[in-house]
Image (cartoon, rainbow, N blue to C red):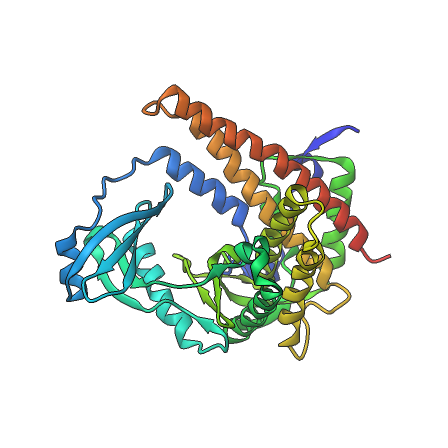
Length: 378
């Protein structure tokens, strides 16, 4: 089948006055991913020393026994802080972040707690170390939703957790909804056109049909969480701890959050099926997505978009999320080639890991287009 570039499939969309009015809300997640990759490639990470015991003690107002690096990635470091009076706290240090992002992230803990959503818990903020871009919070206990799925000892807890995650998200959206307005298909088309992928002519036609059908759909817009994924939840005693708050306040179509959770959970189900094809818990695993959707929709008295278009709209945001991941992964491959300070072995490992991810994302893209085709109205 002949291939066409995204630019060939989509002509530059005409931006309507209605779409221009919506530009204050962000729909350009692929474009933002490209800018983020460029920023990381051209910037040099500032040297940021870990917080010292003295600094932690001054900020907390109590004696600290030890501070140990617990988890880390290229953006953050997380430390386990043992307190002399007993108990453990967590210190999170933002390495690749501005002062504004640092301020926003720790402020979000208080904002989320103020919503007072049943079943939702947020770690309590204990101290700030602005000079080290570090904040200290209470240790959130429990198991992540993916861990519940893989652990045979937890029975149906994963279904309870997913349904509760859906209800919590719906209540967040009700609190944050600013208006009901038409789906911004022109802006979404422009954003997807910035993705470094190639679409077949069939995929281009499917996407065009999706946009045409959703042009008449109304959606909720307002604040979004953006990174509402199963790994950011810890489940214990019938409640969910929401960790890793966003560092940027974003406005957009709130269905994005719904699709984020679902797409991450779907990938976890695929891994589970591949690794445990004969596990009896496969039936429970398959029910997690429906439990999340059931919890989400149960809170609303009126669905936006309307029930007939809801699956199609949610799947479109699934595709946009995959487009964001593909953009980031291609940027990582390019950065791995440019790593001059790393050893050859490290460059090879980084490049290999990123290259493996790209074919998997390409397969997911194709699967999503098949789902879109099936969900188009007859």
